[in-house]
Image (cartoon, rainbow, N blue to C red; front, side, top):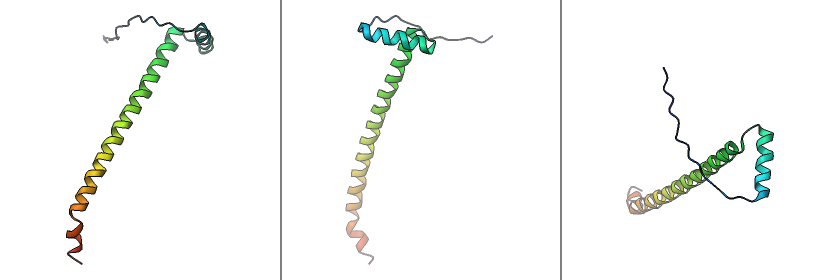
Length: 85
């Protein structure tokens, strides 16, 4: 017997404009989804985009720091490299 673990769902009340609600209603009917499903998927997608941007910014900072360190190391050996010429 498989045990299915579901995440506990919670209710979140959000105020939106009537125009946005109308768009959500139309799109949910078009896609054959409930409004709550469409909203949840939209939030998940937006959060993934934000997390991706944060990760990319962290990687950019890490690469820049590594680049600066590599430059300092190469400057330390600048004169040693010319000794063999």
